Amino acid sequence: MTASRAAWVFVTPALVILGLFFLLPVIAALVLSLTDYDLYALADIRNLRFVALENYWTLLHRPLFWSALGHTAYFVVVGVPLSMAASLGAAMLLNSPLARFRAFFRTALFAPVVTTVVAVAVIWRYLFNTQYGLVNYVLDRMGLGHVDWLGDPHWAMPTIILFAVWKNFGYNMIIFMAGLQAIPGDLYEAARIDGASPFAQFRHITLQMLKPTMTMVSILTVSGYFQLFAEPYVMTEGGPLQSTTSVLYLMYEEGFKWWNLGSASAVAFILFVIMFAVTATMLRLSKRGEPA
Amino acid sequence: MSPRTAKAIVNGLLFAGAAVAIAPLLYMVSVSFMTPGEASALPPPVLPGHPTLGNYRQLFMNAGMGRYLFNSLLISTAITLISLAFNLMAGYAFAKLEFTGRQRLFQVLLGALVIPAQVAMLPLFLLLKYMGLVNTYGAVIVPALATIFGIFLVRQYASGIPNDLLEAARIDGAGEFRIFATIVMPLLKPIMVTLAIFTFLAAWNDFMWPLIALTGQEHYTLPIALASLSREHVQDSELMMAGSVVTILPVLVLFLALQRYYLEGLLLGSVKG
Image 1 (spheres, each protein chain N blue to C red):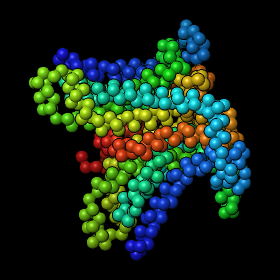
Image 2 (cartoon, rainbow over the protein chains, first blue to last red):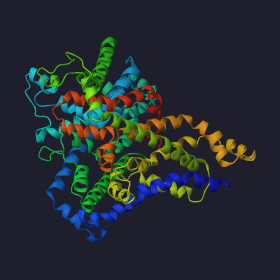
Image 3 (tube, helix red, strand yellow):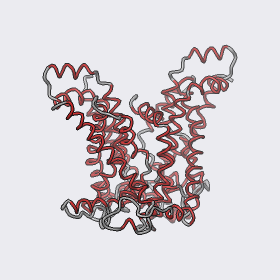
Image 4 (cartoon, one colour):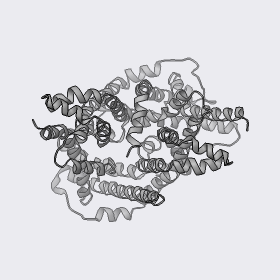
């Protein structure tokens, strides 16, 4: 058998799976979003009607869609910088020549990443329980008073953000550590001799040299955080008062609770377009800073 | 600042960070051994007064946890083994074998990386429904049998195999499949281990797709079962903590045993563009 024939045998299984169960459905999602596919069409496909952009038009007039978009944006805008700061801080501590028991600390800090979201969300729901949660108990003892963490619409999303930062920061921490290790020590040496303060060193050396890593990590984190779903599903069921209903949560409810698959596809597509626009803009902005 | 103070600050902060990271997990284990209702007392108890295995017993005897554990193991193992084979073959072919359209196909795959998986979920559900696969193990397994990320990872790694080695084998008359099995596979062993852990962890922890594809309890994976149990048993903290332990422990142990490969793979997959 020729090498090229063999090559096709090697790539075909993977391409068939990806084509049939990923690329085809993505294209189908676009078509689906232009139809009124609902429970009636699910029962009998002859009930299906082409409605052009009506799903999109209706969505743009639904307050729930805009608030879901707002909650998701809130989660991304607050959660991503917090999560990156925690990752970078932990990476710098681990990378410090003063740090001891590095392997142990690295493993401990990374542990939340490999846990299952649903299971750890259950733990957090208990810790942040209004009446008997440990967090409120400690706050009470410190005289700071009670917070209804997951029951107050103003606090539910911040609590979910804290949870997400705790769960995810270890992932970027590892990538930042590799970036930090690639910075030549001479640079810091020279800066010290020139009398640069630790803060100036951080700003002019660490942050400058980490820029490519920073770009990549921020883009990956942003697209990950746009896909908020499991956390509100388990911790708050989108509430209270829909304050934690994210775009994907809306898509799930629209599609698999109410079986409006056409409209849910439109939600998915709008999310995709927004994610694409945001990450492409970030990429372009980061490239503009570099010499061509 | 004296070096001793600096050292104390760095290590103190690391200790505090590590404590915040693992304290909830340790607390979960502790509460899972408490008697029903004990965890809802004030002040919240840190350790169980009378440690009991009752919660675990109830989970496995009455709540069907054994079944869910089996489902999770079956689904994750099947996905890991088969997708490993498919991704390895494809990744190697994209790296080392000439065929028309190779470049363009790979570009298409890379481009598709930006599409979030959720966009495909609604039509995928319909497709599987018409295939009669909804609410079977297949509904979760089949769509996961190849990943762009996996192919990409293998291609990166396989491009390091010297062409001379493959040419020499061809001149000696070895067929392409023999070359793959006897020369390429052993060389790809490190990336196989890495990809296997990644895939297994991702499959085990996956939530949204199994939630959609599995409509009946008999096929539930642990995360889905846990989410559904926690809606029924909102007040039973002790029972839910035991459920969380059963869900998290297998992947945590796997990670601890093989963390070197996992962390290397994380860098391989993300830093090199």
